[in-house]
Length: 375
Length: 99
Image (cartoon, rainbow over all chains, first blue to last red; front, side):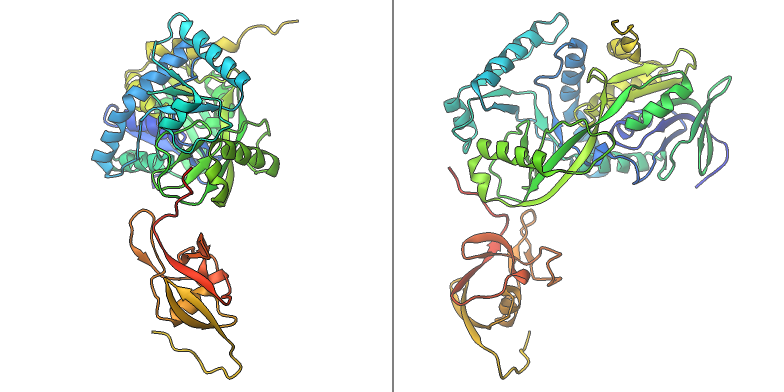
């Protein structure tokens, strides 16, 4: 491993799904490319997430986010194919469409209204969705319980194995001879007259450009290069059931069966600061909703629980930014590193290789938060 | 493969493994009873479908999963035998009751 002032064209900071996907897209497009990863002490959203590639409901209040999400879902098959061709790792992408289930009539009314409002926004891409009544829902998803009032189906939704995805991205980086440095937390980024010097405990790297993709770590690093990343941790807890014979083809927002048969139950959202511990009240609620959705899961055993921290911005949408104070510094942060992995690799990275953010991302600058607070 | 050590005070327990009656000793775990009865592979894996045998014998590896008295995915190395117990080797992942 080289220390000292190695020179790179681009240094990506963050080895999770966002950083690795961007670096994967940059590899082959820029010459000397490095990726710095803090190591296993990092708060790894990438290792704790649920694994949905999800479109429905994304974009309420922000049609550009809806368009970006749909573009990523559409780019996903090409990313999965490319990763398998290069690394032999099948990330188990399935896009059979996805379903969100509603357990009360109120929920149905609100959900349908929100879907209509979202799709009526100017600039929102139009796509089909179906409200399935209990009979139609049970026909499509056998085993759905009598408490479920309706299901919302959207054919663009899907899921993937997020651990295999992270592994495949890193395998592809190695094969592309990207200078990947695990155990390299970034202490400081020093803007130079041209480019940047990135300080780590194991030496410094000089870079023409830097891409900040370190999740919650961006909040500390962004101001060093004239950017802001107002992100906070939002805890999500997950209940894992033992492996079962395949019984569920469609991913559901709160419940999915993985390619290996394991069932994941999740989608809790808590403001718990930097704590990634689990707690029984939330786990019990997750289990209760899962049983209302699939009563037969009553007999299945829980084998594991875990919590992870989403990287949540003030308004819940991603932040993509380019520094005007220090040109060449970029920021990418979001809470949907799985869904957006294809957009990051295939749409964002090529633009970054050319030295700019894609036009589609202009409205995602953190400048949107610069409004005076109401008195 | 396995031979029992002599134990004059041993009490026999009758159980059924995959429909075949066999004898174990009180205090055996289901895994030990199956190994002593010559049943080496106790399950096949959910993904690859390859055979597995009890490995760690202390509750850690989950390789000894079997169906005991109708309940699948039990760890054979943690369950003591009981008279009349019915044990089945487990083929792949368990299923949940279809509704």
